[in-house]
Image (tube, rainbow, N blue to C red):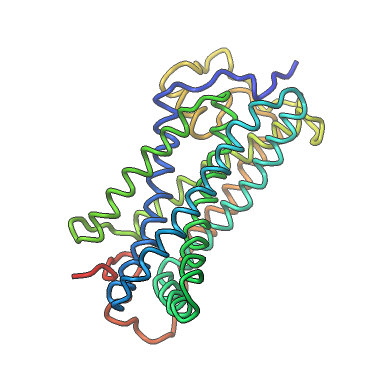
Length: 303
């Protein structure tokens, strides 16, 4: 008999903290870079008066993201039975679609995101304070929604635990500290390599979320093959071991996946990973301005 995914034993606290914390660092740093570019642009443009509106937009975006995460994390824990599996499955699939789109978009936009943000902020400054706040809200909110959706799998696997949220907050705090150091030139990061490797990590995490969603929908009866297992390593796979908690807690691995789950995981990785890793075609546009950063530079920072 199938066991409901929501009734599975929660991963260890360390695993929940590490997995969600790593996502928090990656996504938090990505968001921090966006904020850093906006602030640096306003400082260089002698428009410090608009900084408060940027921070207002950032605060509103953060509040929205926290609300989304809390709704996903604690809202699903109040629903039981097949309804919980159905909600978890649909939420997981939606998360995979949005996260995949964002990861692939960032791959192409990383080198030119600074120019787009500057152009957008110039237009917002011409319109007024609310436009500046809205610009910051959408720029940060876009990254934040991706972060909240990435933790769908953690919200379900943790059986209502608050540790994924704690890990996410700790990761964001670390990212905020790194962003401040970047702003003042205390540290430098090769962003091309950072986003490349963490992007690979996010794709594998998303593949696990996809497999989790498939299983949930099979349990709910929306997808076939719920009793057709690809293999069953439950007798040899120790879910309480360090490797068991890491694989289960971070990558949503389970020792008894269905054939549909394995196929979905493999197809996703085989299709999305090459798309993400393929070389970005060179642009024929003019060379960037002196303060225009490339994917592995931080020249947006004030001297």
